[in-house]
Length: 227
Image 1 (cartoon, rainbow, N blue to C red):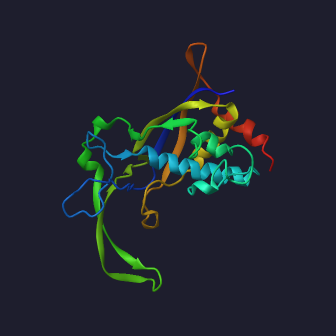
Image 2 (cartoon, helix red, strand yellow; image 1 turned 60 degrees about the horizontal axis):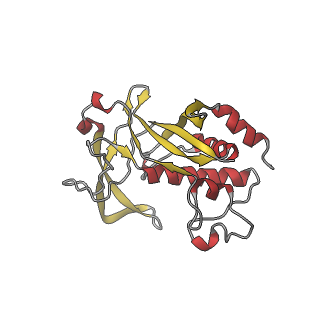
């Protein structure tokens, strides 16, 4: 049986972050970062959702569960060679099934303490010819990066996921959360390392949100996996 569920995610930067902001232009910067309406760095819902689904699929395969192979519709449930929908499609949906969970983007925690302009810096990079392993002519470009933070504390972003899931589906989703170690682009240049964790989980029962035991939900599904 599915129940209403709310998950609060928290992402702490371990290195500068670059998530391209489509439609945003900055003078002399080829690849600006994504910003919210107040001008602060923002991690879009699609970025979080995509990385979570990838790691959930990998975890399920490793633990012996059948999983379809997106993004091609003909290779996704229910046309993936077995009956019904795989657990990843039950959580995140497929072209023939609505998603069990909806998420927003992750916004900067306590944004008012720092000017948004101080959170960004510019970097210059050059494209590499992968065949020759050398710098490629006329491929110099600049990009913006969000500062990781200061000292031992990285910038922290928070956001929610809400929907209707079974306890099994919720357990697998939560187990995939700490596996996400990078977000955004330019990972080869040392950008995008994060620590993603579950800050809060609650079920809507008896007319109110009731906290759930995150560790127990994960242990129950991992202990009963086929592998």
